[in-house]
Image 1 (tube, rainbow, N blue to C red):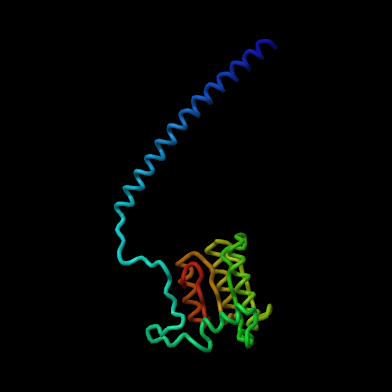
Image 2 (image 1 turned 45 degrees about the horizontal axis):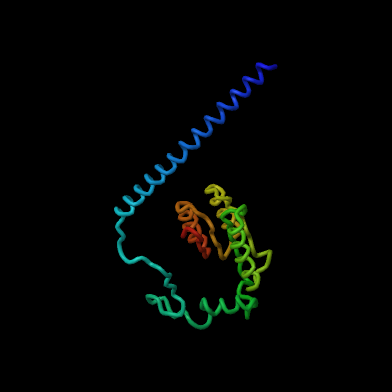
Length: 191
């Protein structure tokens, strides 16, 4: 038993010495790695050349005429509907005769679910009902996204908000939407 205690004591002392030496080495390595990363980042930044003027604020076509698209002020404009949404009551049941479908990017991500729930809330305020509203979860999966879109087209939605991140699948979905006569809006990645 005495030999075991001596062996354990030696192992503990050796472990302690090794730990101190290793920690001291880590500090040096970390500083060198950080310095190397800063040098690399500086070199990379110097090589980047921007073309054009960066956009610091989006310029939305709200309240102005945009390349012949028409005047965005007045009845049925963004501001017209926004005022009603902020008030929490729409003047008419604009969504009454339409079917609305939205896919959630990932129901497991709270912000994605909040965005989807917000769209459904305002759709229902505008006259949509639970029977004319369909919400499906894409779960960050391209195959699920395509299957959900097919289900939405089979359901014959009038309005479809596609919340997906894959450009190729969104392009396929947009083509199907045109074929089906479904109005579609892409979130995160355009359609």
